[in-house]
Image (cartoon, rainbow, N blue to C red; front, side, top):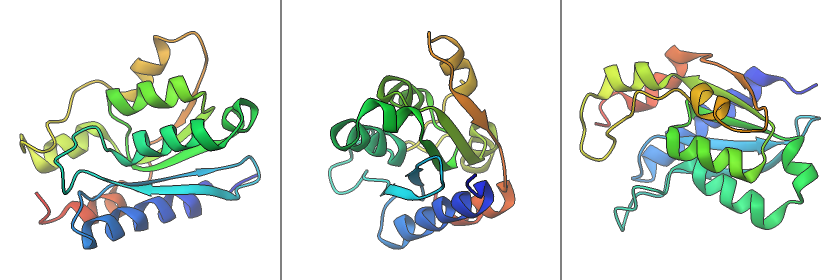
Length: 155
């Protein structure tokens, strides 16, 4: 079994790396059922202002291209923050079987307010997944204090 907290801390570290590189502070990784990291992603908003280039969405797209459906179904996406409605849809359509996240969408919204580059939605990923026809296991929020650090002063 994978060590969820270790892998989540890696996603949180990716968020810090993303911020250090001039991007929004979000990171995600995909791991197989044994906890082996298959791929990682950070936010891709800059330089084009692509509001859809969230780390989780970029990772889901790459997973669809590079991994067969059965690998995605047995994988866990670890995200520094709760996947938004768009990313949750991408995770669902990619067929990823499990999500573990750090900072909740509600806490993120309270932390950054109405920043024009990240207008968070009050729609938890569990609600998006529940509207689908395939179950996705969700764990989180976890390590919220650690996940919040990369956002301090970023917005």
